[in-house]
Length: 178
Image 1 (cartoon, rainbow, N blue to C red):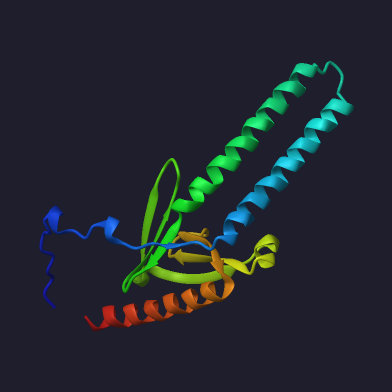
Image 2 (tube, rainbow, N blue to C red):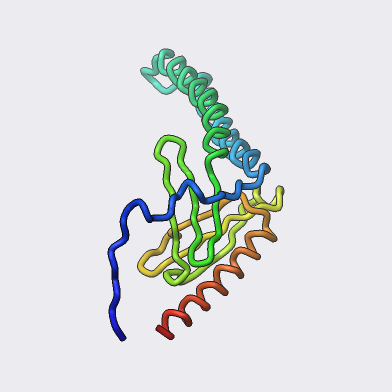
């Protein structure tokens, strides 16, 4: 076997902008907002508990500061969650899966199929209400998933899981032949 590793000019590299990303399900935006609302309601309950049952030496300015922070977090959530949702997407290609996310720090992760060790599909209680799931893809050497694609229809997540597992097996067989 002859090892060949020719240099490639940077102009000849494939452009990531040419990838057509598949958007996440629209219902996933509702799931994100519901989870944020649950957090905000619990925070508001905590703030009112401080208001009605203040500890000793408690100054009401802490309550007003907390309410102001809660209001800023609420407004920011309602603006930023939809903006971040529009950026998220994935693309399945012949040799890899690409996932894009991040509003402030944009992340594009390409996961080659020959590195995949395990794939699972997870649903939380709110996702089940909307028939959504997250696809988690693991590579060797870690406990957490390397790529997690949320907001997929459950049936699509299961199909994508099967596709990845098939491509992983095909890719490993191809690599062994070479």
